[in-house]
Structures are given as C-alpha cells and as structure tokens.
Amino acid sequence: MDLGWSLFFWLIGITVLHNLVAFGIGWVAGIGSRADIKDRRALIMEIGIQNSGLAIVIILASLEGFGGAAAVIGLWGTWHIIAGLTLVAIFRAKDKTISGKTE
Image (cartoon, rainbow, N blue to C red):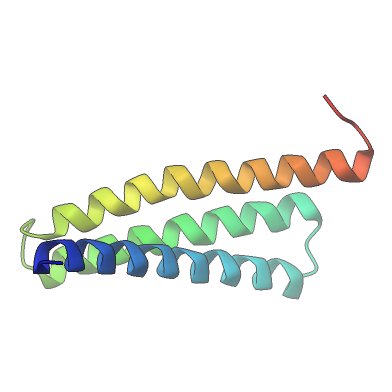
C-alpha cells in the first residue's frame, strides 16, 4: 500500500477515534450532571460536534492556511453526517424498544 492510502486510512481512524472520544465525554457529562435522557443525548451530540469543530480550527491554525487540512475537514464533515445519523438511529431504536412500539 502506498503512502497516500496509508495516510488516508490513518486520517479516517484518527477522525473516528477523536469523535467517538468526544461523544463519550458528552455521555459522561450527561451522566455526571444527572441530566434526563433528552438532555444527555443533546450533550452527546453537542460535545461531539463542537469538539471536532475546535480540532478543525486548531488544524487550520497550525498549518498556517488551508493546505492539507482540506482532507481532514472533509473527513470530519462526512464523519459527522455518518455518526450523527447513526446515533439518531440508535436512539430511535432504543426508544422503540423501551416504549414497545414497532413500525
């Protein structure tokens, strides 16, 4: 595998790991603050998304311009769509299980 593909898969791994840690921090913050389920879910999404936004700003600032950060920004944006939709699907499935509804 050449360096380009290795770097691409490394970036995907870092992107996913970074965002999963952020979602985990949101979950812990919700538990720690004794938030109800709706507020806990909001914390999970907000902290996960905002943490990645901060990382994008740090990358752009440290690279002194746009440069190679475009790939990272694109991956983060794509990952947010995937992760957000996945979390919503998980939350909805859990809600259906709890309420006993099936559609």
